Image (cartoon, rainbow, N blue to C red; front, side, top):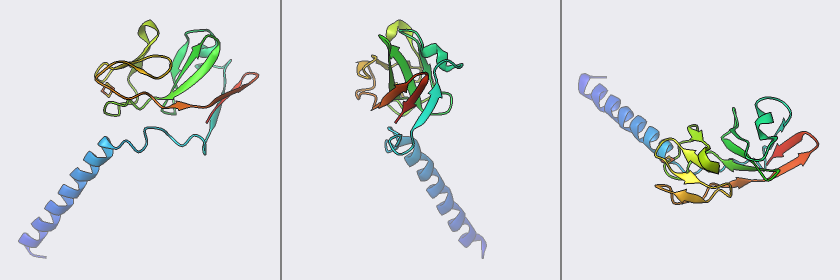
Length: 137
Ligand code: FES
């Protein structure tokens, strides 16, 4: 391989790499995980999930991209992949709304947008509770 051929190959690979990263970061395909096929469970009395035992308690699941909140005694679960540009790990819960720390969008406990820049609701997952075991699907 001569020098020019090497540079052509290397630059093509660099372009594909850049495109791959760019397309992945913009992908909306995994905004809602397929938890129906791969549900997960936790014990609500164990830390950190015991934060959900009281009305208004919330947490970002430490391993799943799922926001959990207790609304009037019922646990609700939403994707933590923000509908703006896909940030998933910088959430807070001021004044009873989810706030994405990337650009400040807020969502209520129904997953609906309260303020942008996001303009789409957070997808909700099914929640089943049996005793202290909560299953998200
Ligand atoms: S990614 Fe959440 S507000 Fe921009």
